[in-house]
Image (cartoon, rainbow, N blue to C red):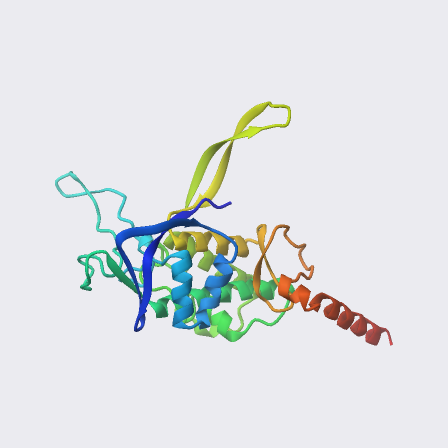
Amino acid sequence: MEGTVWPVPGRVECDGDRLVYDTRDGFERWVDSGPGLLENFLALGDASDDDIVRFAQRWGVLHLCEHELPASHNPGVFPVWTVDDSPGWPSRCQWLGEAGSGHIRPIGVYWESIATWRKFARQGMAVVRVIAGVESGSLITPEDRALVSPRSAHFHRAGPYFGGQSLPAGIEGNPAGIATASTRTLVADAGIIAEGWVRLGGVRLNCEVTNRIYDDGHGDFELAASLGGRSLFAALAVQLLTVVTRSDGFAICSACGSLYGRQIKPKRGQRNYCPPCQVAKKPQRDAEAQRRRRQAIQN
C-alpha cells in the first residue's frame, strides 16, 4: 500500500522546548517505513524530550511550519493567475527557521516545537484506541473521545487542517455531543483525523509498472498502485489510515491495547495478542478467565 521515502537530517538535538535540526551538511541518509515507525511515534505523546530526539535521529523530523503543521500541507506547487493574466506561484509554507519565516538562525538550521510532536502523537494514539474500543466493545475514555472529536477544544486542527475545507455544519461549538457520541460517530471522527493527516502529509497515489518473472522463465508486467509521499508525516499518515480502515499490516492487542505489526488481518471480533503479551501468556489467561465466566453462568 505504501511507497514513501524521505531524508533524515545529519544532526538533530534538543534546545529547550524545541527540536533543532541542521541540514548545512546535507541529509545523512534516506529512510523508508519500517517496523516500529507508527507504534514508536504514537508512544511519544507521554515520552521524554530525549526519547523524541532519539526518534527524530532515527526516523527524521516533521518539518513543521508556522501553523504548527507539516509544511507539506501547503507546498505552493499549484500555479495561480495574477490580475495581468501572467502565471504566478503562491507562497509555500516554510520550515521554521527558514529565511522569511520570522525566526533567525543560521541558514540550513531549523526547529520545531516538541509540544506539537506530542499533540500529534496523542491524537494518533487516541485514534488507535478508539478503533480498538469499537472493535472489542470496550470502554472508550472521555480523553480519547475529546482528542478525536472535532467538537472538542482539544481537537488539534491548527491552521488549514483540512486543506481549506470546513468542518461539517454543526460540528464545532457542540461539546455536549462528545460524551454521548455514538459508535458510528466515533469511527467517523477517527476517519476525519486519518483524512486530515493524509492531507497534511501531501500523500499521493503512485503508479508504477513492475516486472514479474515466473519459475518457467516466462515474464510479464503489472501496474501497481501505492500511497506515499516524501516525508515522515506522509508515512505516518498512510500507516494511520491503514489502522483506521483495518487493512493488513497492523493489529491492536486485545490485552494491552498497543499497536503492533501483523501480516494477517485478524477476524472481526477475534482476540489477538502482540508478541510481548504472548510471551506473558496473556492468551492462556484470558481463555481461562472466559472459561470460568461461562462455567459460572451455567451454574
